[in-house]
Length: 497
Image (cartoon, rainbow, N blue to C red; front, side, top):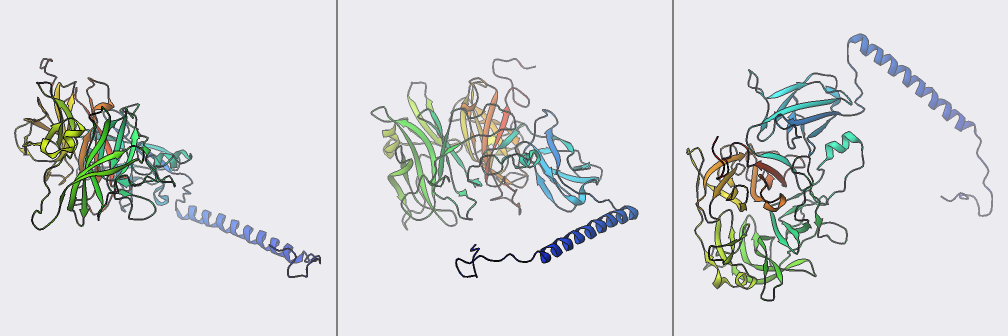
């Protein structure tokens, strides 16, 4: 501001008389006093008329817990009778702040994807609670299936409700709001991660050529909620996770089959297969790619197939969630499948690079349920050796599930990674929502532990849901199975009760 203008330079501006300022202050005080008297009168009239006036200066804490374990339960929705929905965060908390319901007995419809409360005689599934500013309420829910939901792994606002209640500083955010299916590989002493199409805050179109990160091999200190995995993302100069597989060609790049394999010189190479995608979900090109350690990005190693009029379907390639297996002759194989092995090659970089050394397998297409009533068709999933069960185990999404088309998760076992897989147990449900491409994390717990952890992509895509779950949609959620508890059978050496 120029304090001399509009007067000539070098000339001091005279002070304006103070009387107008005094009048303004007097008028402001007078109006404030009138407003205060009006408010007092209105409140008194409201009390005389029997109207409750509530000032919701702080939210009411609603904590949702598992009635069996007492653990907080993420992803439980409470909905009022006028259709306001709130969803628990990773701490199992809701910061309830509706002013019209403070001090009012309120019915909350409860929906929890496998967690529920008793249904009343009118068929209503919910609870009554009276929220008040600063109060703490608890809702106990019953888990209907073996899978325990531990929390969301990716996206923003993992503990947003807790932060509102605590009034603390926001936690450090990843810079992403959602990401599609996950890939992992143990490489250079770390767990290397990759995710597909990724949502950013800045624009509806985000990253479409995979993003990446690393963590320790065992990224969790505890296997009960609340949980949080801290990823070291590969970022651009602005600190936002960047593309790590922007391979030549049109359309998004999807990678699969992450694996670290030794080459002839003994150096481990992080490898994957790629697909270039055109709308709506058409594969136009497939091939192999290798991680460039210095540039921190995947580079094309070779193209395997490109769409043309003569050959419209891509051939088999090393994809899915691979495992390394040593057969009874002592030979090490890399098995690629989704969920069951469909291709194998010797577990070396040179064999992986040479399609002539690939061997096609015939994966099992159905698994009989443990109760013998049905055959379950797997969609996608993964396998792993489990020392506690002394078996190979699998987690897979059912194709065309009853409660959700791609949201029902099953567990099964086998003596061999090649099957036969049998005695499938329904372990997780997602009512009217998708939960696809589940991945087992066998290295997250000590060897011989009965705890089995797995994650998958929670999304309304391919589901009948018209509304996405805030914050959770298009993100990874972690579940836990306790293989020493019902309904899982005892280990082979343990007698039946």
